[in-house]
Image (cartoon, rainbow, N blue to C red; front, top):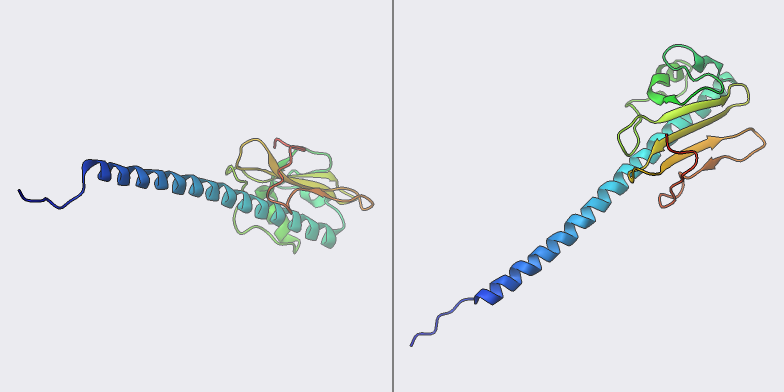
Length: 162
């Protein structure tokens, strides 16, 4: 009787199951990485808009110029798409936007001028989880800014949703 060399069916099934389990772990890991990357991009976009508004206010000492054109970011107004204000910001010498600033959900970053003369504003964009958002609010000169941009693990619920 000849002895046949090879693997049994049970051994092959065990190998297939192990490969399947490893594949599940890889897919779950990659999904989390994509969400973190989208959140990082959203944080960077909110920061870019925040920096542009800060520079604009420093150059013009007012946000009244943002109420014209497509921007419509007048004092106490509603949130507007930050991309509509890019040309005005760039025209003043502040950094404009090379791309349309988007949040982790693919929606435009929103900005709001709270008070045109004291330089208070708010910027926000949705997080990848679909429930919370990244935000930055600059209050009056005597108050401190509120933000959750420094810690990517802390997602604020106020002043969200966008």
